[in-house]
Length: 81
Image (cartoon, rainbow, N blue to C red; front, side):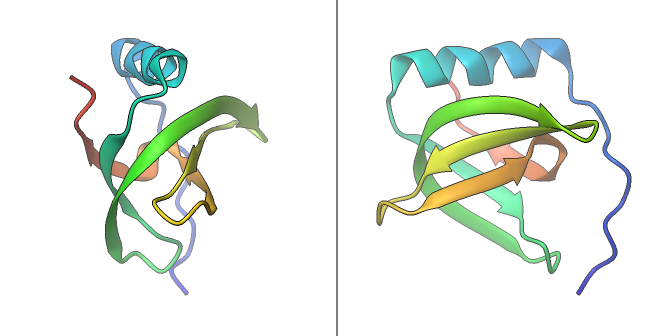
C-alpha cells in the first residue's frame, strides 16, 4: 500500500470542466492512480464532486455500473473536451 500524500488542489478551470461534464452526463475517458499507486484507465460517467476532510473527490460510474470515488489530484488525465 502506498502512503497517501497530502492533497494538492487542482486548477479552478479543471474543476469547472469536471462540473460541466457532470451536467452533460456523457462518458469521459480517465486515467488515475489507484490507492496502490497503479495507473488505471476507463470510460466513466461523472456524477458528483464533493469535499471531504480537505480533499476534493469525484464520483463516477464505471463501464460495469460500479461506483468510483477518485481524489481529483489522483486523476492523471481526462478527455473533458
